Image (cartoon, rainbow, N blue to C red; front, side):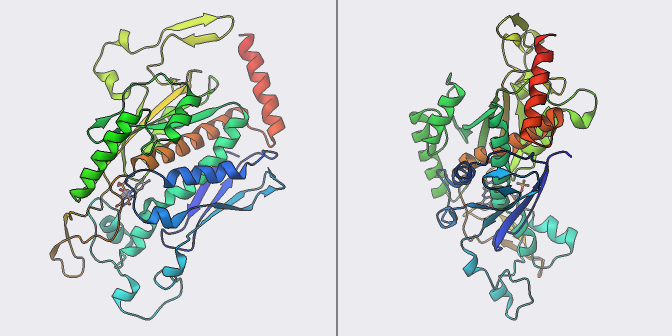
Length: 389
Ligand SMILES: Cc1cc2nc3c(=O)[nH]c(=O)nc-3n(C[C@H](O)[C@H](O)[C@H](O)COP(=O)(O)O)c2cc1C
């Protein structure tokens, strides 16, 4: 059975829920590490009040016993700490009251799912769309990704992520190791590698906020320790770079994805794009460079995976854009409740999480077994095959 998950729940509902199917038994679960990932998603300069209310934690409600997975589906829950204020508005039973009291939404926000979802599902209260399309759902995806990371880490595969651009401000290149990158960016309010860029980005976000606007950016994720041969060249839907691209594009507000040098590959000659193959007793086959970001032919090549995604500016603006009321068909300028000006640092954590998931899924396809011990045997046998090749 391949690894999969589904999520349910609304942004202001009682909880977000996920069921993960396909994790092997006997994986030791680090509960602190799980909640650490949720905390990371909530941090970041430029975020609004909800992040202070939230303080997300995940509860495991199935599939783990005495600290280890049992092989049964894992049920994850992230509660909404602000539920008491939303019980009526989000009640599953019919409630009495005016549109105002029900917080009915009839003014679709540009850049959101509101209008398309209302038309498609024939919903006259656009709250039924926005509640589910909200990026709050990424909290439970980060929780699923945290479980995937624990599986990967058991096999020596590590992930880091960082912000490389917010609007006009670009982070300089760095030569930090993956562990250093993790450490340094964890201390940064905007998840960048150096303090000067951090200051510039903070000031830039302040300015954007003052202007009633919002800003997007570019985030990067690196995965180290990935064995050669995850994914496959033989079928379109088994190409792991393609599957990662889909996962990245599924993150709210992501509008593009790059692997390795990405779009730059279309601007320079082949001799400056492809990575030459080398061999040494110690490392086996490896590449002289890693411009292709760890992928050739839809398969991992043993080099670190490098995945970048671009996030558009948050669509809810304090300086409102024009839209049309679905009741009156009249134009109005969208009024704003409350929103972040920039969620790029948080998006970097979501990127890491979805990439972790796809790599874990491909890892289990290659080495799949019902228990950790069985997978360990499969990994060992493959390593022997590689050594004797
Ligand atoms: C971590 C994160 C936080 C977000 N926060 C907000 C927000 O506070 N306000 C908002 O309007 N959009 C926010 N978004 C973006 C919207 O969820 C997204 O643009 C919207 O659902 C429409 O989807 P699309 O942009 O993928 O088409 C956020 C996205 C992410 C990844």
